[in-house]
Image: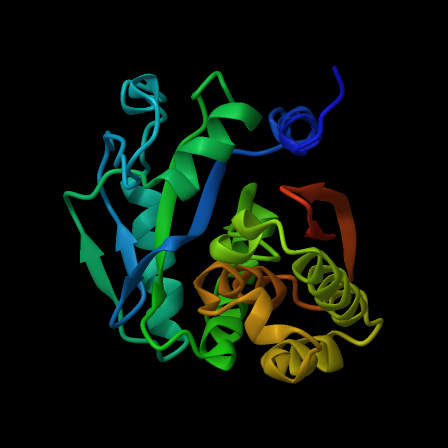
Length: 247
């Protein structure tokens, strides 16, 4: 049967993440490309619902269930770390998990038994701000918190659906640049390169808007001096995509 659209490879990668981390972590912090606020906003909901923030999908996708608990104590710690770093914050007490959280995590962690806290992006999507946000949260990693930036290394849906072979080539060029930047052996240079992502070949064609790229910047900031590596490389709907890991 094969896997012509690439979903199977991506699903297997997400399952591998779950297998690698499930027994090693106490909680998960997710920054998703689907939540932006004027300041970093922490979700304090103890039992989040699911936010079906998509349209035109099959009916069953609006019936999905993934009852992972929130963690108000971890949310408070996240808030305090951001405040200590000089970042204004806000609290969210109603919002459910958006699909940037529950879709990948229900594949990686189907047991839904690990507490999850979501943190928003900052409107304006400035790279340096999000790297700084990640740096403020680095210490959580040594406390058993897995920090996940949920987005896509290529996110031009119109281009992906167009069937235009030029888009595939553009995605390859951008992916090569992004991987080179993430894998730079000097974390300071790595982060500097990421702040300059618009200079990459095919940058705007790959990300007409950068909300799906910016979660990577938070992860890079939280990595501290740990090095980044390409942890997944594949093709999805004829474009090159990658995932990265810092450890």
